[in-house]
Length: 396
Ligand SMILES: [Zn+2]
Image (cartoon, rainbow, N blue to C red):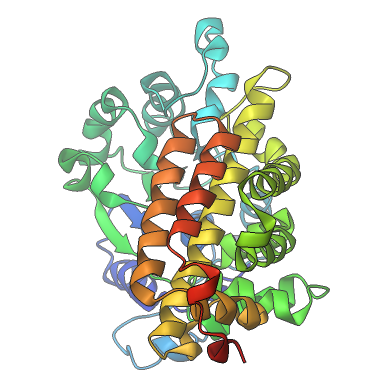
């Protein structure tokens, strides 16, 4: 994939390409910003460029035109190095993540549960290899995913390598939150900021990547993902749209549905969502196959997703109540948003968002899901006036 396929990240492109043009290329970077906006894609494209012996000079996209001091560069895309790095099998390209402990030479490290990105993984896969000569060309590139998960010991061990990287080594740390890295780590790296993508662009790329996705899903997911294309794609594949339709219908009709049926519906939806999460969670080392956590953890993640969808409905109710219908995310369920907005004022909807957030904290801390959702439903119903007080004229 060409480097400029990463769009709407003009600052990131400029920082990298200007450094390259000036021949004062830093050896350590922190790519930081929201999930799903192109950090990993650009890191891999930049790695290909560093490893390609014959870079080319492409036309930059519109948002980068006008920077005449920069000689834009990209990997050629055709040589053996480009082929190997595109397949992520280049011997001088190492992607580092916490579950890599399963490939560590020491059996005790392999047997450990990968709770964080530990010092053993960082030592073996980054520090030691950074000192090796490149196997093919003139560089070795390390891309560290979710680098905020590096333990303090791992970050401390890495400091010297970041400070004075062996000549040919480039280290790119990716993180959704630069503040969660130690100040000593941050001060040794060139920060490269990433921003949320424009909604129109998310729509366009969603349509390209998932041509069969119905239009109403594309519209909802592009808004709900908040400019995070990768997140929208994952949500499409996990089937959250179907789950949110059922959830919003139940919330709009909460008095009739009642707390215990709402709790049942939520648990059922969470179990369905969980099926889609299991593989990814095993892959990333969050859970192991075939133990108790392999069923409960993905379901918990499904519950949290449903709470975030519920919170989205009530935020839409606030927008509707404040006369900003163009801001709502549930564009495909405006009737449900209107129904709730007719029953409760924006202040009460804001209180509902707070209640949902509290429930999220409880669920994340292992609370009984059925009880937590029943209690939430009771509290949401209390925010609504009794039937007799309802003004029927606003429903029309
Ligand atoms: Zn090449």
